Image 1: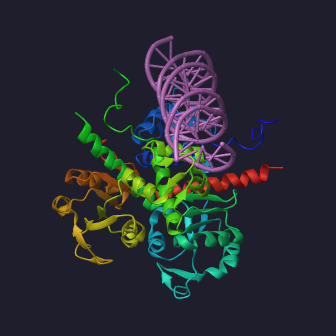
Image 2: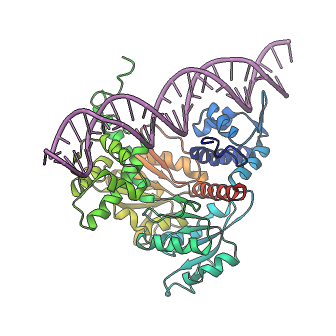
Image 3: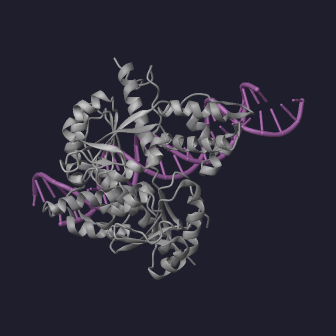
Length: 224
Length: 224
DNA sequence: TAGATTGTTAATCGATTAACAATC
DNA sequence: TAGATTGTTAATCGATTAACAATC
């Protein structure tokens, strides 16, 4: 009885690395679609992304059977299927919290809208910012978070507040009923496990890059 | 003779997952430092980050011996050591390429500066933008990239151009002598292997979050 | 039919966790 | 000394790659 935990009705949850790749597949498929391709093989899908064909098939197998042996995959069908898998076959209303530099930037970022993510509320705790209009969005007070989240059925939040208030702000969002947070603050958040959390720490990304470059350099020097 | 490839002089390159965590350790250490802590154990370092103590020690072991059995790690020493490991014990001059919404945002983002990354050039291919001042930075023409990169010894670039020009722009940067690119464009880049590349695709991050939330919901429904 | 390509099982590889002797 | 905690080796776990029978 110990093992069979989640094998019942609930879909076996895909290894998290898989989802990252599925998003890439979707991009690539959409590109093929624009180019008018009707059918593709796992190799044609993976290669431009530097992913092996076997990996592509294995990843897709997590969610069902989408292809036909000897034939490949129908581009438009697979796009639809993957959109459903990720959960972006419908719109997601978003709240953006914290209208600093980064928050302002994200308001203007087109990449979200194009994929069904729609910012329907912009919140800030600073009274000086409340009432302003930024990129056509009205900044509303953080104190109204409870009513706003409920009324507009907001499930996801972009958290762009300074690190020192990130934790309490996140807790407020959770209390208001939000289900997931994209955290741009450079600090780890501790939230209930049922809340979705993805960290986007630009400083960390840049440090990763610095390390890679440094390595490449030292290898250059030591190499024959 | 087949195996001993990189065991010689060149440091055995750390598993890439390790570097991501090392950046987190550094954050945590800096926080302890601000709090006045002098010494910490691997458990005290890992726990706030939800990382096991054994993992912390294993990660650090990739780069040398930093602790003392029975005692732990000296906070300030470890900070210095890790900064050196990542390669941020000195400043990195940065070029920001593409002054769209996201580019503007990143110009105002304080997180970079605080960690030794300093934007010393802002480039754009659009003549209408060249000559503008954004956040005190003068926008210079993309065509001057060769002289600018050389003169200001720029090693890293933040690529914030639209997806359709990302690849040619990246190639131009490489030709100009850049060693690493932080790619914000939602498209995979194909560059020579010696060029460092880190992708930051906000759309993909948000899709990851959507998937998590969707899963949590369906589990809620199916659970007893 | 012959050639292509899937879904899936088995083999390999790498990363995480546990355990413990060595050491302060 | 006794208690704490490291660095490291062995055991476990998960993810990637290779191989191939099944199928169009």
